[in-house]
Image (cartoon, rainbow, N blue to C red):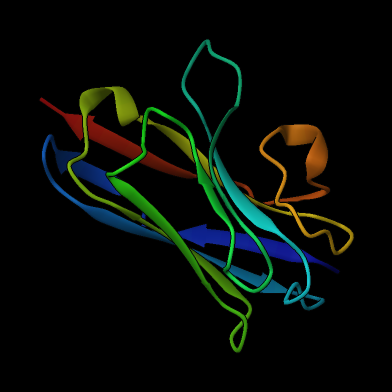
Length: 126
């Protein structure tokens, strides 16, 4: 059974930092793109960042560019999201996702991903 398990969420003050992790099990995703999405209450799930299998290509939403960094360690089948200079508007449930098939370009929308984690809550206070 394939599982993606996020961790690292929590409560942080504005301007602070958090690092999210996503541990994959049940299969390896070393050849597949992976990504992070987030969803705030009453809003649709939105793209945050994506990374190609070899970490050569990384995409970010405009709202997090320059503050967040996506990375992966294929040796341990784990995806990361380093979040710096956090803002109140970054508050959301953060989900990691993995594509089902190897592709060169990492998707930046939800239909591009087949596997999803259960989410980890990030709350940024003012």
